[in-house]
Length: 102
Image (cartoon, rainbow, N blue to C red; front, top):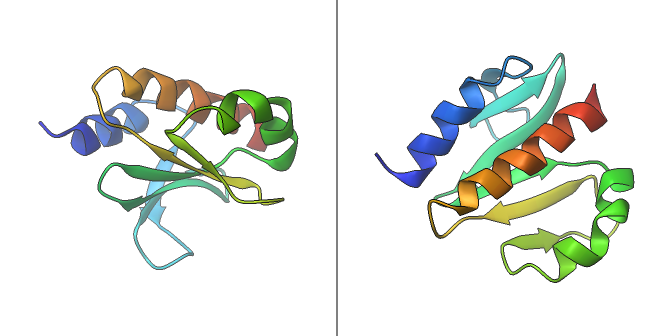
């Protein structure tokens, strides 16, 4: 199983998330209620609505991590994974995004 498929399966296992088409381009996305919080941008890349407040609180950590790409004052951060161990890090941030968007 690819890392993308494994991450998708693990995201679907989170009770708070529903999967349906994205408002941003029609790709599959993950929602908390009516709010889109994540979608795959491409192989090995997830756009995550972490929220400005949560990004601000983790800015030093995210800025120093090559797996994260910040977008100025956006609610969104782009996450990349390269190794199976990276998926735990992505899921930790997805859980933070769920809490921040609930």
